[in-house]
Length: 346
Image (cartoon, rainbow, N blue to C red; front, side):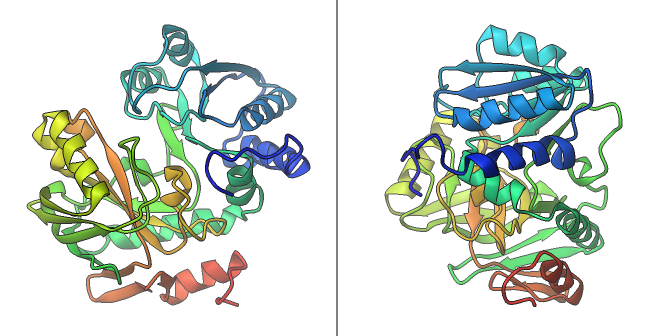
């Protein structure tokens, strides 16, 4: 389905109910009495937000759904009512297209031990494909394997048919984002089918070609032409391509901060419900067999952050190749894919 083309209300209605229930029981369990904030902007699919609100109520949680105008960009301050509710929420399901991840409101929620669940732009079709129909246990195990083995390497190298030729050095300290979360809360949770590692920001060297999706800025999304970045010492030194590359260049320049050009993270994408990019970054980052890279070091003060997708990636951990042109070839990873029933691994 094309983005912006709305289905009839009954589209996947039964499957939606099952997926919403799975979201609040298996993916992010809701306990009786918990204060659960559900946010959606005017670009969101309200059918999803309403279904999740009902599922939270069924689990004994206390849902509060807030719907508000779409902000121009992600990470901007939301209405004060949203900020106030986020400050006292136990769990926060954020379906807003202009998401709150990394915003001051998000940080306040983290400081108050909220669990922030980023499900930006999720519609009925996406919830059913990426949550309702996904076996989450092998997905969790695969995510942990990728993190642990990546952290045990010294160098990660990524190539792609689109022209990516990139290397980065692992920071042995690890990434708390991929470690088991604290019991008290105060952490973000992302959609399943993604894992990563901690690399030194200044160690990214080579060519990075986004050929799947890139968002924000809001003018982008599903890419019509590749965007080619040359990286030195972790910073973007040159951007080449067509119209979309020019849009990215102007957007980064407008940020007026050198850390906007610094690499922030690298992630594996492997949700079995996502086989092609759609322009919705939440699922595009999880296209099966992709690599996703975040640009804009927000912890160091960058006011902007963007995520781009490299399709059909090949990945080496030191001298061991674990993925080839989007297919996981390490025996352990192939076994996880088989357990999830993926075509070509049976």
